[in-house]
Length: 323
Image (cartoon, rainbow, N blue to C red):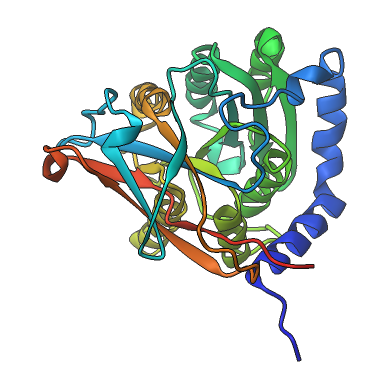
């Protein structure tokens, strides 16, 4: 019997999560951005019209991971898919206006946040206000319920009010929050960045970690995860840390583990710097098969000082599959 591909399974999972939880985000989107629906229909001018184009977000840093390299051109990169060289046909840097940016911010507001919520609210509000180059921002708060909405740039003050009005309480539906964001982001064009803050493990999601990883691999979202696990026991700390690190590494992002919430301002500034330093490479795969298989991507720097540079990019993607 023919077994469905991973890609098909992911699509079915997306449909199932949409069925039970997308209503909340859809209603909020209708309210917050209904006056300017065209904001969600903008196309990335660099990549428009090439539905078969593979897009990869790439961050390059020096020996010290904080030293971001922002002066590279298309000729400084080489792309390999499953070991075979690919021709770069589109290139952009985060600083270019043509590279439309969509940002998703996920914030844990479960009961364990009751003592630190004020500080995390202030930090995330500052971060949202520092993204004038973003086309829109999707904000999702999660406890045992997951709620979200998409806001245009002109609605940042309204979004800030919503953040300030949050109250802590309930369990932690972390995986469901990620699934909801990925479902909403799948319809967007351009660069997509998800910034996640949580202080604990998932306790009540319908989605599993494995399913979330399938969805992340099927997406073109770069994940920046912040895990403040200082109050957790060692038996929980290491598994939680590992999960966030895997999510970020798989998508070409970074995971941060502050000792105190007082480090959040600095971390959000670092995330902002990475977002603005990210390159986007586009290529048309030489693999013409439509079997939904996982395809490994390897990005290399061709410049003379390549050995002193570190490259972060997503590990691969699911190829197309026939219905």
